[in-house]
Length: 296
Image (cartoon, rainbow, N blue to C red; front, side, top):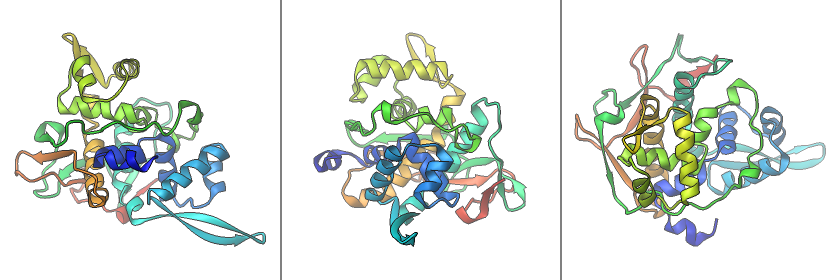
């Protein structure tokens, strides 16, 4: 991505440029499951060598992964380890898993998440007061004219390929919501209150054809529903709020210090604090930490 384009993006725009791609999210997911080497991702995901090499290069440049040399067969190769910035995405991946498991019908169930010795349904809570939070419990202030800016097209559709059939690596719903840059900003705009085609179009620097396509897809997915000449979020659509809130918080933590302007401020109405989104176990009520959860 050209440096002048990067510099013009807000924190959210930059975060979406780095994260809103299905292959990137699946590579991150497998990295959390212990994959570090090229062949491991290629074999687990069925991704082509050229696409995988490109994503690893981009993720390393973005500071999500760090390359570490190792010797094998008399040659020096690189393995890729999650950086602190990459490790901080664990809660986003858990939120994506939980939304997919809760809302997207599938023939083979996703693996169960466990917290300690019990299954772990997930809920979003306010880090300041500990209360459970939904989209309706918050107020969002837009700090820049266009929160996403003009997102660059990094990955043509032809490079996306066919996603793997492995249930752990198949997120058809989330691939549309957070694995596609324009899908993500359409849902974010709906959470901010956009309802009509004209309102979405004013907010987003997107062509009418692309916008029509994403709105049509989300209606088919029951994320949006036609409503009095416009669109409204369904319960399934509003349930994406934890994903969006965690992206906003991650972007502020890691990209704000780099000089990208803040785009959104989410406030928890009940306590008045800027929302610090945390995931908690709905079974025991404890806040989740990366080291305390695992998939079975």
